[in-house]
Amino acid sequence: MKTANKIVVACLLSMGTSLATAQTTIYDANRWMTTDLNGTARFVGMGGAMGALGGDISTMGTNPAGIGIYRSNDVMISFGVENTKAKSALGMSQDKTHASFDNAGFVFSAKIGNNTALRFANFGFNYRRLGSFNRSMLTGGTFAASQTLQMADMLNYDGYGTLNPPTEKILQANDVFHNPEVPWLGALAYNAGAGTTGTNDQNGLLIPHYITDAGGNAILERYYPYMANGDQVAQNYRSKESGGIHSFDINGALNFYDRFYIGATLGLYSIDYDRRSTYDEDFTGSDSQNYGGYTLTNRYWADGSGVDFKLGIIVRPFEDSSFRFGLAVHTPTLFSVTERNSASIDYALSSDVKGNSSVYDTDGYGMDGDFQYKVVTPWKFNASLGYTVGSAVALGAEYEYADRSAGKIEDPDGYEMGETTDMQDMMKAMHTIRVGAEIRLAREFSLRLGYNYITAPFKNDAYKYLPYNSIRTDTEYANLGATNNYTAGLGYRGKSFYADLAYRYNTYKETFYAFHRKELSGGTEITNSNHKLMLTLGLRF
Image (cartoon, rainbow, N blue to C red; front, side, top):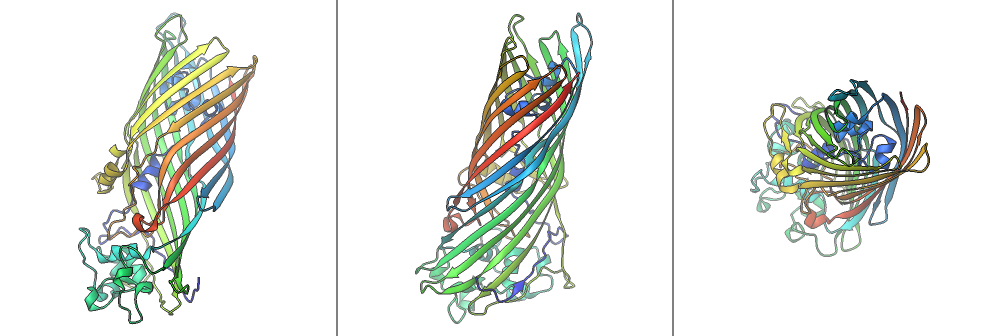
């Protein structure tokens, strides 16, 4: 791409009195709701299907009653190494390998008596890396569309879809980035020379320069809804993500008659997330001439905290049978999130159309800020079955339900924002199935196998909506498909010391869009393949 001038834009989100526009999206909210299959190596090796079997520290986060199974103290630590790979249907791929600290915790078990109704009272704490965001991605393609059309749409229309472009005077004013009627992405495009407001007969529309004639007039048949005459846009997208969701579980559980177990967990959460991305477009006309292009660089990062409560039971209904079932309910998690973003753009056309742009306050200085909001996740319900054959075999099965469309996005004062309606319209109920088995190979050694399946969180027609006056400048999004986890593990149990090894293969597909004009850009299928090897070391005493 020919680049004649660099335009650096430092645009951290601002939430001043003139910028009261909601900034987050359902794709951000979904990220905070997503959890990985992670925990102890035994838990992972059995596919997480231990809600009714219990006796593992990780069950604090699924069925809190599982800690009631303990009859001795336990302390452990888990860590591992993970490789994540994202491969585009166009053949591009990126992979990343990193070490991970997965969880650490303890259980203190207090025996009450053999002849009392209450046999054990147990207390536990567990840190677990609930979700990992570490991933790199690269994709691209050639389409008859440009993101500049979205820039134009955001600037040309008001919140009701009515043609209402700002005047040249508004776009050139010192307070343009404080004007609640002007989107930052559109203003940046104009100030960077990426478009013109056209002539009077075009009603002042922002028209991307590459679809204007020599006189700067719009060629409407090439503007909407598609480009024609052989014109093409070569697009490339690259991103690097990092961070995670961290869970801190505080649990108490009781054992009655060795047949009824009840437990509760207070869950505390911490979020850190960082995404750096670049999006390129090169314009090529039907005459095969390159007309230049641009590179938009975005950084988006967020941090936050959350809290929820979980209650669960395990029942062994038949005295002479090891069969038991479990039930658990998780209250909505209340997340408080602060998000920020910054961006830069290089823009140059072969016709020497270029300019300088930056986000500035009314005094002409660089402007920064942040945006705060709350996410209320849906209720979660869990049912599980467990059965052991002597000390040789343990079998577990589990089902979990959570309706993502019932989630909410609120402002810091607790008032629902418009994105809640987007969640209702574009998200759906999620179903999770987990199965697992543990087979005792010898007195000290065990083999474990597991599988779980998670349905997609988004409807097929979901898209990322940025309000017409949004100060967000990152337009990319992806609709996730169903997730499959395949697991295997080995375990050693000594008199006190134990060690568990697990392997997890996680795979899912997603349809990636660089911007929301789906009918123009088309989607690119990305296949994500994640391999993880983890080790748990512990003592029971």
